[in-house]
Length: 194
Ligand code: GDP
Image 1 (spheres, rainbow, N blue to C red):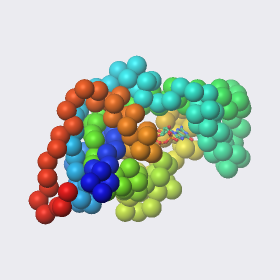
Image 2 (image 1 turned 120 degrees about the vertical axis):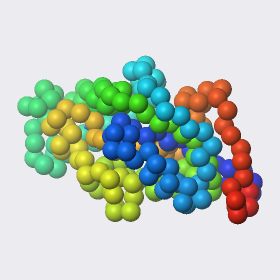
Image 3 (image 1 turned 120 degrees about the horizontal axis):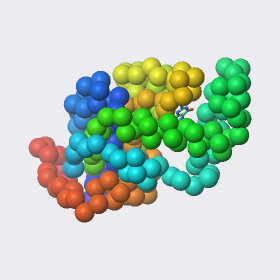
Image 4 (image 1 turned 180 degrees about the vertical axis):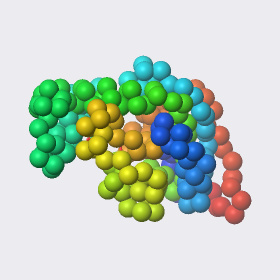
């Protein structure tokens, strides 16, 4: 029971979240749902740090390439004329590079969020990856309208305010990667039984 209340997830506020002045808003949305911030820091990432954060395996890269290609298909656009290729692996590598450019373009805020179903709750509060498709009431739906059609045409990553771990295993890996030996704090919030 206790460990269910102490599930932890990793959140990174991305350059557009920082530059739109949304650090406080993002934190509030977690805190108002009874989730606790147990580690928090602003920092300037290196390209290497971001490169190590995103998976390097071909399956992940190809998935990103397929996702990007699906937007070209949806809008009847030719990937070859704008990207020079229609190969999902090549496009995946290209988009991964755009993501690294984007993620190193400003300081980021990293945090560990703890609470009941923290991984799923934080993803729900954040909304889905593509802001134009995110419901109002989610962070991405309320504060961004970015779309892959525009981002691909401008040869940049979709700007979507924050990253949040997708599974408990990913959260554990990302907390280790981003916080290493740093202290994850413990405290009891007023009125919460934990
Ligand atoms: P996340 O787990 O919600 O961050 O999403 P993914 O792991 O699927 O994608 C990683 C990052 O790649 C996203 O946060 C976006 O910045 C970017 N991205 C995802 N899909 C696309 C796309 O179709 N086009 C472009 N340009 N960027 C994308």
